[in-house]
Image (tube, rainbow, N blue to C red; front, side):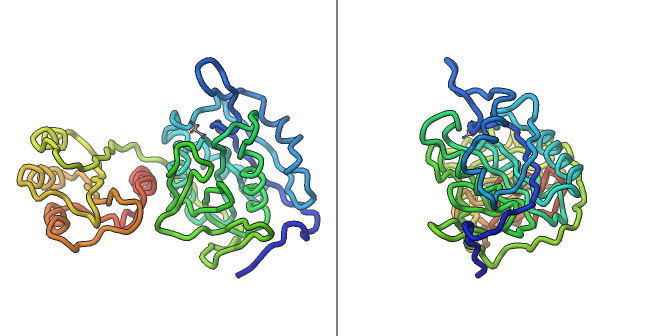
Length: 325
Ligand code: ASN
């Protein structure tokens, strides 16, 4: 396993393009909760001691207007991020996207789908505590993201958070307030920062610099339906009759649903009309399998098993016309 000793690296001439979309990282307290503040972050980052070390790369900060809480991010924002990376691709060694944590895993998954054939690192990071407040996790997260974008050799989209670099394909937000906000229950971290070392897992795609393709978002009417005991299947059947392009069913355990005739016939009708219906487990770890009758019943209705894909990645694939399974 390759190991980097940050302290021993010589001065670097690496250049990183940083896209700042908003999020808690750069927010200020106001009477109506935390809000982003335009034009504030760059000066703060230029003074941050963590970023002044010789092994840290140079960076250019591209601030979006308006800065957003990530709950306001939409597919068109994913497209803008991917297009900006694509437009600046040849001029930088890697890319860091500063983003709110709430929908970071969705944006990271989407950017991965929008830039197939990526040959350089694209690392999303943010914070749970604003940089403006004591005890903020922003300095360490930004430092680790910039460092990994310059030195790790990773050629994929990842999320750097709380001493880990997780693959965008498997990352999800698991903690609303805690600093270890992200996990990849079905994958290993690509990198982990220990006290002395940066450990690189063997799973990384190695950097080759190749310019990716830039795909476009395809407008889709997608809905997510989480199954639960006590559902009203008559109402669900009416809902499934709406003109969806795709429905992600969050099923029980290893992909099971109640074998209720009203539900099953509504699913069968919808899939016969061309609605793509996907079976994804509502469990965080594990995958969808035809182990039980409930999963076979869904497959008989034309419902497609999602394997171990995250909700974020499934949505991203649906919205970019990528392969689902
Ligand atoms: N609401 C914030 C956001 O997603 C949460 C955060 O960044 N920690 O923009």
